[in-house]
Length: 138
Image 1 (cartoon, rainbow, N blue to C red):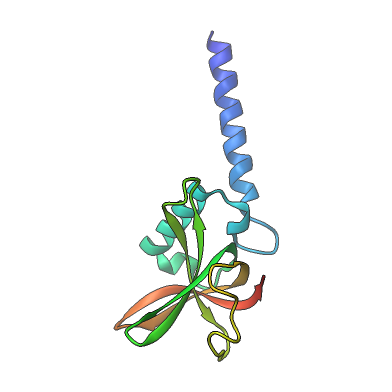
Image 2: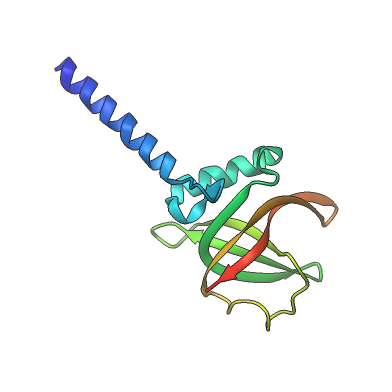
């Protein structure tokens, strides 16, 4: 019985390690396109708690493009949804160069893949960790 328990524990640890390592790639420090919703939510939460740990890290995220006006400024985001479709997680995205909305952006609600670097940006009287987009793909 102890052998079976030890074998199951070792297998679970190996699977967790494999899942964690597959969330990272050689090209990106954090590849959200390879993470499941729970892993992505945990990383986004950690980004909010310890933003300095993620400054200048390369990121890839695939999800639903959305934007909204907030205090006269347009904000952009890429959202990942849980299995029930009720709860999103994601990243605020800042265009690297001046773009005109909506002409230069993906269609609202479309699936996009955005790559770039995480940077602390001053907005609305505070600092926010955002993905500065280097590329957008639909």
